[in-house]
Image (tube, rainbow, N blue to C red):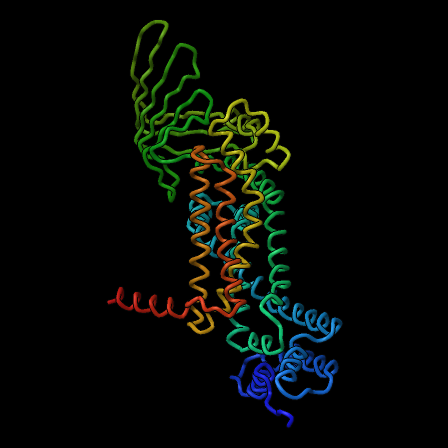
Length: 463
């Protein structure tokens, strides 16, 4: 007697096909079912011989569902890879924009201070933001890659599309090509930023800052700080009133005259500028001048109502232009040459070596974090969707803390900079591979249990 019992894999596929029409409005199961599952069904139908009775027949039917012909498998994989990759593109763009905005919000107070208090034009501020973008993107893109993969897998799991793939005989490893492709794109962009974008941006910021500082010298002045940017003049200001552009409690040590040191103290002053000549005029009110003649060994004091002092900024401008490039401003060849030419292994050597390894370790982090996001998205289906996002952010925070610790310890030479920069990638990569293999073997990671415990802890803490 011929057995009519259907194998489990075929039964799950049929039940999902019938239930796909009853999903909530707004879901995209119909597109997926007509695309990927439709091709799977068509290919398996075209390549399937007549059924065989008994247990052998059930095994053969399961093999036909799981293993179609070579050309059919390639076609299904191509459709699947294209579909999953297209699903990842919109979240990737949105994540990059969102996290870049978060980084800019952290600088918003300083940007507002530039515009309101220092009267810097909006165009100049936009240029500074544009030149700073490569620095932000170095950290934003790896995080965006992780969140993109996590969000895509979470959506596919919640819409039962992962079940459809499994019922069609495709394993979790079939999702790796599009995931690795988005990781490769993120890694390539990050590598471009670390090798070319970051040095260009830092150099441009340095030039623009020098131009802005010469036009607005009060930007460089800081309260309760000795400023020696002017040639042979030391300037100290206790308080700066940016609203009235007034200096309060001014102390000046003037050594421009040979053998004479003049100390000027005034309760109030104003700074006027001639930026095209790199000259600035400090107008002081109701102060005292103490002069000491080193040659005659004499001293005298002068009271004044108004005192004008001309300050020359040419020295500071010349020194800034002649100052050698910083580590973040060097390209790869310059940094390698700088490390090779250092005579001793001091802090400068370790910082430069740290910068060299960071240019490659952060791009590679896209692969470690992206692979880790796949099992987190798969296993978070039974828990709340928000918990999966929180778990992804926690893993990224752990990675960032490990990277920061490696930078701090690497700068002091406590342990090699290479370990400090590559160890976070190794740790996240090993965890990602382990969780991925466990998920592919249908072994639960007990994320649902973690979610319930976390929810109880939050509830208890809230009380």
